[in-house]
Length: 346
Ligand code: SF4
Image (cartoon, rainbow, N blue to C red; front, side, top):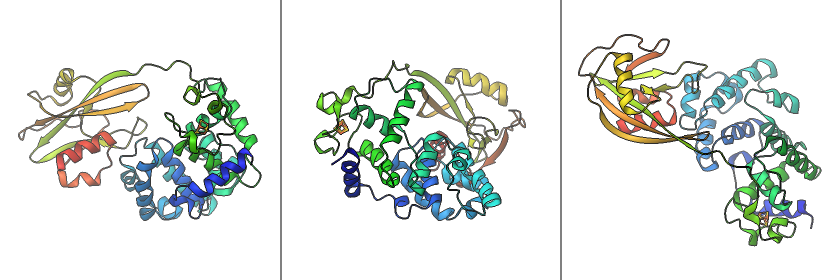
C-alpha cells in the first residue's frame, strides 16, 4: 500500500466521530475550525454543541446581538474569533444569501481565516485539493521525512506546505487532510508516539532511525517570563463593580473586575489613584494565565467599600456597572474573570 492509502484506510477505521464529520456542512466546518484555532478538541466539543443550539444557521448567528455571541464564547479565549464569526455571518447574509462560499479565494478573504483555516475549510467542507499545515501535520511530516529544517523558522514552513499539497490524493482531500491531522493527534504524539500501531511506520524515516522524538527540529525556544497582575473585587451594598474593556484593546468588549498589570502592593496605589479609596485587601485566590512566552499569576483580592461611593468613570472611556452576583451570567467575561465570577457565586 502507498503512504496515502495506508493513512486513508487507518482513518476510515479510527476517525473520531466528531459532530461536524456527520454531514460536512460548511457552516459547521467553519465554526469548528475557528474554535479549534487556539483551543483543544475536548474543550471545543461542548462549546460547539451549545453554539449550534443557540445559532443553528448562519442567519440566526447574523441576527443575534454581540453580547449573546460573546457569552456563548465565554471561556474559549481569543474573543476576536467570536466577533469575526458574527461579522462574517452578517456579511454572508447580506452578500451571499446566507450561504457559505465554496471559492477558496473568497474563503481566504474572510475575517479571521488564514492560510491554514482556508485550506481546512476548502478541503474538509468542499473536498478541494488545498493544503493544510498545523502543528500535527508539521510533526507527522517532519518525522516521516526526517526533515532537519527547524519548524519555528517561518521560511521553513513553506517546505511543509508544498510537501503536504503534493501528497493529497486526487478526490480524497477531505479524508486525507483530516487523516494526517488525526494521526498527529491520536498516534504520532509529541512524546511517546505510538509507532507500534502507526500505519505509516514502514514509510517513516524517523521511526527507522529510532529518532521519532528528535522531530520536529526547533531552533532555540524563547524563555517563559513570569509576570504578576492583580484583580480587585470591589463590593458595595451587595453589588460588584464590573468594567467593560474598550473595543480595539485585547479582549475588547468583555467584562472584568478591576485589574492592573502590576503586583498586589503596587495595585493598592492604583486603587487609590483610580478609585480614591484606601484600605486593606482580603486575599481570595491566584489564577494562572499563559500567553505568548508569559506565565502570569493573577492575584485576586476582595475589597468591601462598606457603602462608600466611588467617583464616576475612574478609567476614561471604560463602561462600568454595579451588578448583583445573580446577574454575572448576563455578562461575557474573559476566562480568568469568569473564574473569579464563579468563585464568588459558588
Ligand atoms: S512511525 Fe512513529 S514517528 Fe513515524 S509517523 Fe508513525 S507514530 Fe509518528
